[in-house]
Image 1: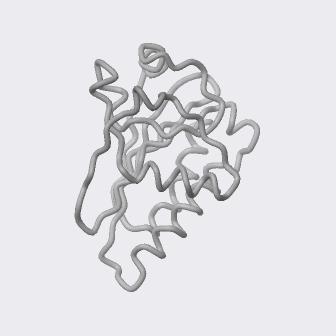
Image 2: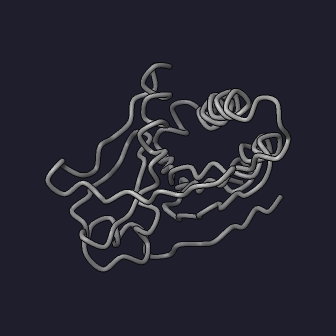
Length: 161
């Protein structure tokens, strides 16, 4: 299992560059939003659609940041690894519901347990961009078993302290 934390100092400016204002709900964003120069460069994992569906079915609203005209292209990965989307969790949402990260990780873990049922060989990769109350952004990159996902909420809580 590996968990990597990376500060993204100019992330708010990058969002503004793509015409994205303040985000107050969960957003599934292109994987390379912090390095892309133009909208045509943006790429999202195909599992972003699955994650949107899981969240919607469970009553968690998401922000759509791009119109269908500017929808980021998909990245298709094949193999016995699940490549999840990049999930942006804004500080305002965490202030309203401090358990939102645990809920999302729980839903995702349940989905992955079902997907990898009968084997222990499956791994998951997931990026979460966390906005702290002070406006700082940190990217958490996870790669490992589904069991290890349960550590992410505690790591995110520690970023706010």
